[in-house]
Image (cartoon, rainbow, N blue to C red; front, side):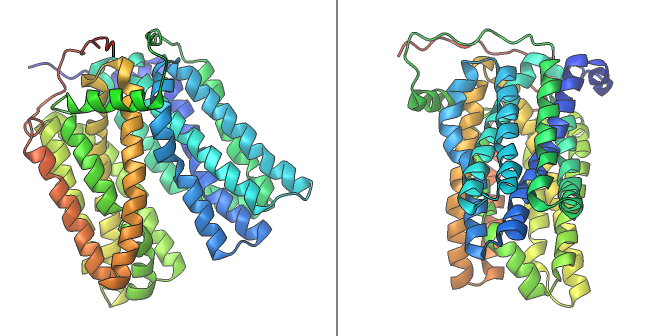
Length: 425
């Protein structure tokens, strides 16, 4: 059996360490920006709840749109250059906020546009990052590399909101956004120093069309038996999982009776769980295999989420179950996403990784929007607790796509990298 390379190999890999540094500051910047746009709207413009809802939707909506058009662009470009451009674009967009505030011109329409464009640039960065990593490190190190990157995301999820609050406490709201732009600028500078050994961008005899790019990415996924079940899970999980979006806060605050501060502390427990999940994932993949880690952690994730609708008064009991659900749920979610992402990067042709990531982003974004709307409707019709139970059962059922597939017993990532055959059509 092939031996896994020691995880310490990446600590001496100069290119990966610089990419990791760039991704670290970019992750913190994204978390600060996520809170920062809303805080700016509340503290400076005194936005209404409806305006805040529109702002959040515009910030998160670009995932589906960018996913439809960005994959081919990434695959026909130097991925590192796309990441640098995404960082610099976010710097320029966010700088318009304090400038407009200084000129007394800041208004909600500008925040809408900036939030949407920054969200789109962030998705573009993530797609390019996903496609770039396999060209930077050996296939045997993909699991460890993705685990390290996920660890950074988990830490940013814990500390990012706190950093945003501190910045907005020290500075007036719009000018605190300067901290976010600085993180993106630092990320771009780190990426400039990453030694690139990318494949030459794809040259096609066809005129690029976004729908062909989507078709190419989709075809690559469904033609690979080890990746195809991940797409079906990528449809089911965000659809049912997004039921929690409009209902979780209502359930914690109104049904269980948590205070806003206690609710925030409960949510922060998820970041702690994600940090442990990033550490656990690599160990599980080595011990029980890639496939069992994916479906086993999916089932464990669903089991922990079931603690949410099971929680109830008294307050200490409900809070304890919600915190446990956050720690275990986010932990096992990260634990199965790391090997799933690594598998996609390893078994699909590198020339198509951008389009593949774009398809997953588009599916995830679209299902999230549809599921959130349906979850809100069901919550008002059936009740919040009942809708959350349906959500968890639906996600658990989505695991069956892996259980009844060739991925079920996969022990390690296949050795051979596939070669992309030209498609003349």
